[in-house]
Amino acid sequence: MFTDRKIINYQERTFDFTISITFVLLIVTLFGFSQKAPEYLSIIDYYLKIYICLFLIWRFNPFRSNIKFTNLDAKISFNAGLLILASTALNQYVKFFETDIVSKIKQMFYDVF
Image 1 (cartoon, rainbow, N blue to C red):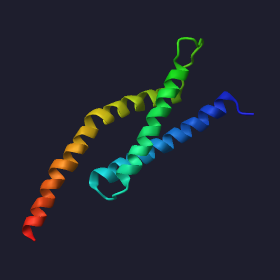
Image 2 (cartoon, rainbow, N blue to C red):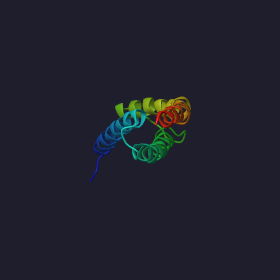
Image 3 (cartoon, rainbow, N blue to C red):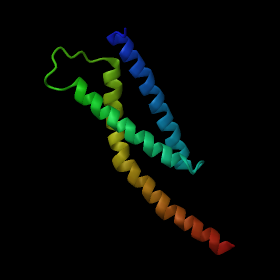
Image 4 (cartoon, helix red, strand yellow):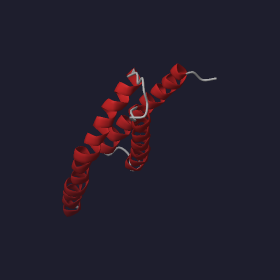
C-alpha cells in the first residue's frame, strides 16, 4: 500500500510537472505562438487553483495536530502566492496587451494593405 512518503513523492512530481507545463503555456501565450495555448492555460490554471486550495485546506486545517512542514508544502505555498499574483496582476496585463496593443497592430496592418 502507499505510505505517506510515496504519496508525497507522487504529488510532488505531479505538481512539478503541472507547474512546468503552466509556465511553458504562459510563455507560448504571451508570445502568441499558439491560438489554443490560452485555452489550455485557463483549464490548467483552474484545476491547479482547485488542487492548491484543497491541499492547503487539508494540510493546514486547525483540527489536525502534529503538522510537519514538508518540501511539498513549501512548493505549494510558494506557487499559491505566484498564482494569486498571476491571476490578479499579470492576467490584467495580458488582457490589456491582447485587447489594446494587438488590436492596434491589426489596425495598422489593415491600414497598410
